[in-house]
Image (tube, rainbow, N blue to C red; front, side, top):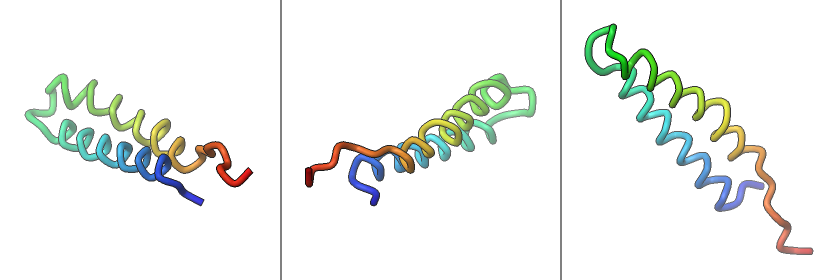
Length: 63
C-alpha cells in the first residue's frame, strides 16, 4: 500500500516533471536551459523520484 511518504515522493516527482517540461519549452531551440537543465530534471524525475515513490517501503508500524 502507498502511504503518505510514497504519495509525497510521487507528488515531488510530478512537480519536477512539470518544471522540466516548462524548462524544455522555454526560449529558442538552442537555449542552454532547454538543452541541458530540462533533460537532467526530467531524467531525475522519471528514473529516480517516481520509482522511489512507488517502490519505497517504510517501516511497518503494525509489527
